[in-house]
Length: 633
Image (cartoon, rainbow, N blue to C red):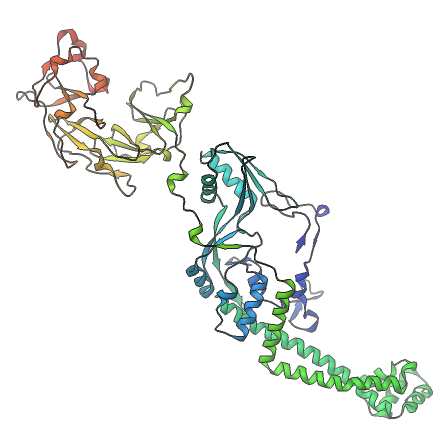
C-alpha cells in the first residue's frame, strides 16, 4: 500500500476518509500476476455471491518480505521482514543450489522504518536455522549542537514515535532525564522526526546512551517463524520456508501453464476447421447463403465439412469479408506456431527443472525491476557503546535524616534552599543527619546484629513536608528490629564502626566488612550478639572522637575511640571498657560526641587507660545524671 498522508497513529483516532489517499503500490502486480490463469483455487466468499482466491499467486516469497505478527485465532507468530531484492536473489540462488549459504546473499532482516540492527553472527544463524531467536534494533539520530537539539529520524520497527515520547516522559518523571527540556513529534511529509531540546552544557553522548537504555529507541525483536502449512502451524527456519514456498510456486506455474495450454488447444481446434473450409471456400459461402434459417447454418456446416459444433459456430461467426483465401491462409499459418507452443507448455509442465528455471528468472527480473538498497544498516556489537548502570544515575548532593521513631528522609539539597520546614511526626526527633550523594550506598545497623544496605538512588527524593519512609517497611526489618546507626559510603568503605555492649565491652571493626561484591541487601551477624547492643557510632578515617558511657550505678566514663580495642573480625566481642564492683554490671547509656557537650568538666570523667571505673556525675550536673538513651540519642 502506498499512502500520501500519515494514515494511522498508535494513540489518536484514525484519519478520516476525506483526508486519506491510498493506492496499491506497483509491486502489488507481483501478487496478482497469474490470478486470471487459474494459478490458485477459488472459493465462495462469505456471502456466496462471488468467488475469491484462497491465496494470491505471489511471484516471490512475500512471507519473508512483509513483517507478520500473529495468526488469526491467537496463535503466536512473529516474522521479521527481509529486503525484497535480497530475498529474490537468495531464493533464485537456493533454487539452483540447496547448499547455498543464505547469509551470504541475505545477511539479516531489513525493516521499512530503517534504523540499525546489531548483527551477531551466532544469533542470526540460529534464527535462519530454527526460526527462533532475537536481535536488537536501534534508532538513528543527529545532533544540532548550535540549537541544542537532538533529532531522531529513524526508529526500530517494533516501536512508534508516540511510544518513544511516552518513555521519555515517564523516565523524566523519575528524574532520569533532567537534562531534557522538551520533546516534540515533528514528523511530516519529509519524514519521521522526534526533536529533543536539551539543556546547555549537556553531555549529549551520555544523553543518547541513556535514551537507548531507558526508552524503546533500542528494542529487541523476537523471531518466531510459526507458519501455517496445510492448515497446521509449524515453526521453520528460512531454508525450510523457501522449500515450502518453492513447492507451492511450482504448482502455481504448472497450473498457469496448463491453463495457457488449454486455451491454445481450444484455439488450435478452431483453426483446424479453417483448414477444412480452405478446401472449398465457395461451398461454405454458398451453404451459408442458401440456408433458409439461421438456426440451420451450424448443423449444415457440421454435416458438410465434418466439423464439430464449436468449430462450426466459429466459422459461422467469421465476417463475410474474411471469407477469403488470404485471411484463412494467414490464420492457418498460426497452427504450426500454436502446436509448438502447446508442445513447449507440455514440456514445461513435465519438467521440474524448467519450472525452477522459470521461477528463478522471474525472481531475478523482480529483483532488477523492484529491488532497492537495504534500509536497515548492520552494526557490530563492538560499535554499540556499553552503558554502566551508574551512568544512568543522576548524581547530586542529598541530605539523609533518621528519626528516633524510625523514619527515614532523603532530600535533595536543592529542595532545602530558602526557608523550609522539616516535617516530622508529632513527638518525633532527628537522631542522625548525613550529607552525601545520590550514588551513595546507605548502611543501616540494627539492634539485632544485622546490617541492611540500599543505594540512595533506589529511594525517591522526598519533600521537606513529607514525614519520611518508615524504615521497617522500607528495609523489610524483622519484627521488633530497630535502626541504631546510619552510614553512607561514597563508593569506598573506609573508617571504623564502634560497638558498645551492655556487658561493658566495646570493639572497633573496619567498615569494609560490610562491603560486598554482589548487591546484597542484608548481612547477618554484622557484629557480635553475645550481649545486647547499647550504642554504635561511625568513626571516619583520621579522626579520634570522644564517647561516653553511663552504667547502671550512674557512673560516667569518657574515652577516645583509639582506646577501644580493634579486632580483625566483625563478630569479635571486644574488651571491657568499664570496670567496677559486682553491682556495676551493665552499661545503660552510650553518648556520642555531640551528646557529651551537655556534660560539664569532661576531663573529670576521662580516663587514660581502659577499662576505667568511671565517676559519679557531679551535683552541678545533676540533670545530666538523668540522661538516658531515650533523651540523648
